[in-house]
Image (cartoon, rainbow, N blue to C red; front, side, top):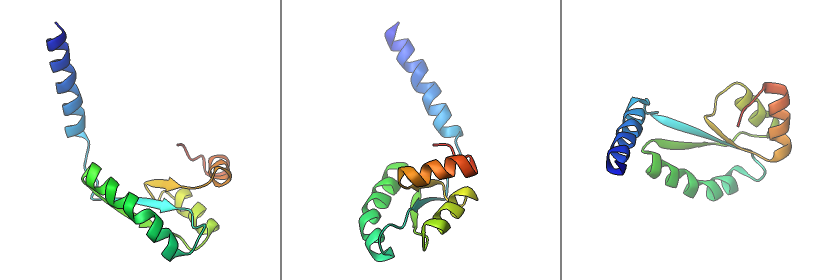
Length: 99
């Protein structure tokens, strides 16, 4: 019985994964708390790791300042965002951003 349940769950999970469209590129927006060079150095290993794990290219998006970051997130121009709690709370309040 357990083997049949595992097989059924495996098929359902695989069918769900296969039904999901692959993104050609995932944009990871990073709150620019340091220079663009420093932020790229810090976050490139994460982007490379995520690219390998999900099978789609993860591209860093490092805006020029906090306001530009908030604008990009609010307009949906990044797929994922990394920020501090204050910016997240402001985006949640002002742009109805969901985690």
